Length: 281
Image 1 (tube, rainbow, N blue to C red):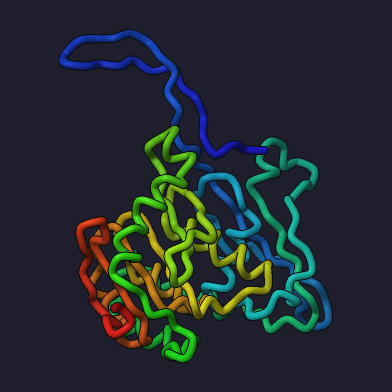
Image 2: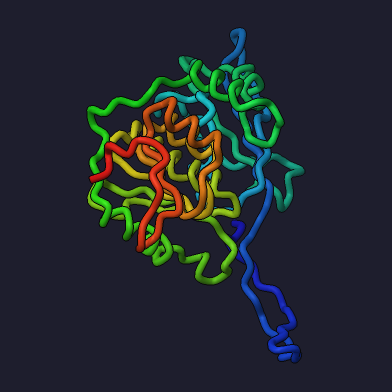
C-alpha cells in the first residue's frame, strides 16, 4: 500500500549556514483514477470517470465522496463493491486505481458528470452558470435540524483540527477537513494535499456508514473556502461551513443561495460571518 508521507534526504540551511544532510518527511502525492462499473443497455460497462492527485489513504471514501458530491450517487445500497484494480499489467500502480461497482438499480448517469465538469472554479465559466447548474442538483437546506452554535464553540474549532492532524505534524504539507457536532466535538478528520479531497473523504466515510445527510453538523476546512467546498458540503447536507482562511466570492454567493452558514478567518480570537449568521449565538 502507498503511504501518506515519504522520507527524503535533504540539506538544511539556517542563518546562511549549511547544517548538513538530514531526513525530511514530506506529504505523499499520487494520482488516483476512479473507474465505475455500471449497468447500461442490458450489459455491464466500465468507465473511467476521473483522475485526481491525492494523498494515498482512505481512497474508497474519496471515491464515494466524489460521486456523491457530483450527484452521481444518492444511496449506500447503490454501491455493490469497492476494490483496487489488480488487473495484469497494472504493476506498482494497482493501488492508484479504484473500481466502484454499482447495482443494476443505480441511477448513475456518466453524462451528468461530463455536463457538470465546468462547475469547478478552474474552468473560466461565469459564477452564475455554476450556481444555476448546482440548482439542478440541490435545493436550499432546511433549518429544521441545522445546529445553533455559540461563538465560543466556533473559536475552539481550529485548534482541535490542528491537534488531530497527525500527518501535517510530520510534514507541514497537508490540508485538512474536519466534521464537528453542534457542541464542537470532533467526529471525523481527514487530511490530503487537496482540501477538496479531504472533504470528499469525510463525505465518503459518512456515505458508507449510511449517515447522510449531515444536517446537524459543522464542516471546518484548513485554508480558504471555495465554491467547490460549498458544493460538496451542500450535496452532503452540511448546513455550516467554516474555514481557517478566506472564502471566495462564489462561495459566499453559493452559501446565500442555498441557506448555508459560511464562516471565514476562524480562529480563537474571532471569525467573519458571510452567510447564515442567524445560526450563531
